[in-house]
Image 1 (spheres, rainbow, N blue to C red):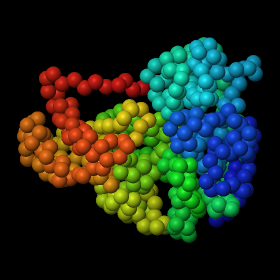
Image 2: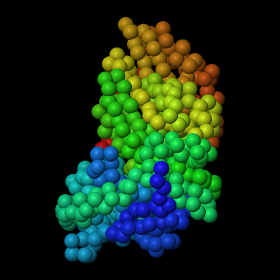
Image 3: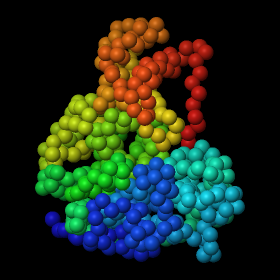
Image 4: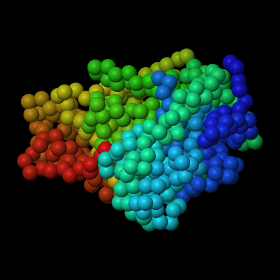
Length: 489
């Protein structure tokens, strides 16, 4: 395997080559401290506030170029090989003055203190490139990952909807120069493994999925980083040493999606963003939940495989995937094994994954026509918040009687897990509210939730039981039941 000892990417209009970069160097620190590009702000350093938002252009498997807003505070420089990073300093109008997004923000009074404004501008820029005439709901979705504490969002939303009156998106520099940028990025892809050694350790960018397997066989102790939406916080909040680091977010071989009649198979590197359209079409019951996974920046960076392999008890995707009967393929070298997702989680901080092994794919069965299925997330605030409890339910009813029930939760134990006592109590009973109420005491057999700053144990237990009640009311369509939903784009 040929090895290159430098990271290469474009920053605005210049090629950057780095042969001495720390494996835990964040893009935010690189921009502000190394390149003096200080329009990108540090607000939270945990991917929550959006003040550090920049666009990263990447070549997808089909050769097209996608620009996505990301949180520079938790994005590592080592993950940028072969990409185009665009910061607020690169924005310009046709006359060399303010960009249409910036002009709209000024004219519609979308900024007060201004600290959050560059990140908001970049999020709106990414939206405008894809959708020059967004609805209010689409603007709100694009801004889920941007917090503003003083302006209020109404003038920002008005500005976002007015951008196209200041210029045409097709005439924007990133669109006019797209063919040239694609050619430049393709030229950077030389098929070599990248290994950069620094004082803090090694960073490795495998050339392919097979090369990833080879790297992990050589370095089984390495930290695998896909989207860094959690690992980034290990560095910025917990000061953890993560070297050696293997970056895999660029591996298009892990980003395939195969749609069959009975199931969908996602490569472990498929981002939440790239999975959304498929989820919305084939498992629409998960669309609302999907749009509550972080903000747009987190959905652009985070991956399905990362959410699973991380093993968090409050990960958003494991409970519904467990309820659907998902299996995963684990790979070590050339050897592969398939296990049920529910069996992957052993206990808090421990998963059924050996050193040097990685999640390669996720097979998600589609809900059958005769099954009820839903998932609900409970948080303190609606958007971009971490789960207090998340319940997922799949029930098959035959002639008014529950023939099969799968109930899975996150936030109720040290791992995502099924409520087997609740399931057993439901099966064989009439599908009625009386039966639902009768099984609620069984929750105490399945769960002993903890109290933390997100929720008390008592609240979690009450909410978990209420989610089963909600599921029944929604699926049964009982007269007088009305579920109020927030509009999502």
